[in-house]
Amino acid sequence: MSDLEDRISECRRRWTASPESRAFIPLADALRQAGLCDEALAVLEKGLTLHPRALGGLVTLARTLSAAGRAERAATVASRILEQDPDNLVALEMLGEDERRRGDTTSAIGYYERLAQLEPGDRHWSAILAGLRAQRDTGPDESGDPDAGLVTLTLVDLYLAQGYRLKAEAMLRRLAAARPDDPALSQRLAQFEAERSPVADLGSIAAVPVLPAPPTVAPASAARREQSREQFASWIERLRAERGAAP
Image (cartoon, rainbow, N blue to C red; front, side, top):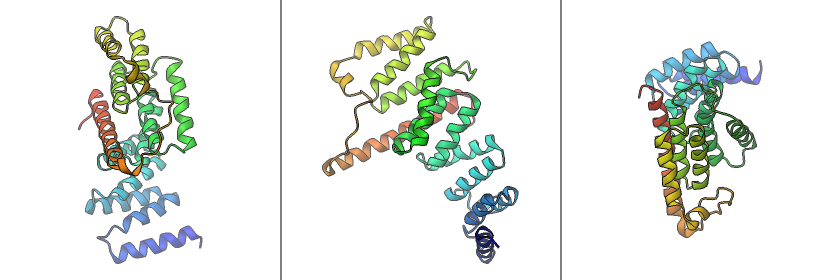
C-alpha cells in the first residue's frame, strides 16, 4: 500500500469516527490527489452541508472541481472563498486562470497583480503577469465584451487606490486613444492632467522599490494593507456587477 493510500485510509478512519467534524477536508484532499475526484466531491458535499463556511473545505472543493475539469464551477467557488478571505492565493490564481481562459486579459491582470503584491518573490506569477501585460499592450482586449472599457476603468481606479498614478494614467491614455469619441474618457483624462503635479508623479512611480516600514510606522502599514484589500474586494464586486453577475 502506498503512502497516499495509507493517508486516505487514516483520514477515512478519522472522519468515520467523527462524522460531524471537519475531518472530511483532509480526506477529500487526499482523494483529490489520488485522482478520485468523484469520491472527493461526494465527501465534500456531505462535509460542507454541516460546515458551509469552512474555508479549507471550500478551497479543497475548488481544487477538486478544477481537477475534474469543471472550471466554471471551480471559479464560482473561488469567488465565495474571496468573500471570506480576499487574499486567498488559491482563489486568486484560480480566478486569474479563469479570466485567461475566457480571453479577458484585463481582468486576469487584476488578479495576477494582486498575487504579485502578496508574493513578490514568486517568479511563476510574475512571469504570467508580464506576459499578460505584454498581450494587453500589443493589441485590444480579446474578451469580446462590449463593456471591457468599464472593466479597464475599474482597474484604473484600483491602480490609483494603490498609489500607482502613472500606471493608471498610462492605461487611461491607451483607453482614450482607442475610444476617442467617448466624452467620459476625455473628461477623465483631462482631470488627470489638471491634477498632475511633480510631487504626485514622484510618489507614484511603480519602479521605485518599496522599503520595509520601520517598526514605528507599522500600524500605518497595516492600515494601507487593509485598504488595499478593501479596494481589491471592491474591484471584484464592480467586475461582477458590470457582467451582470448575481451578488
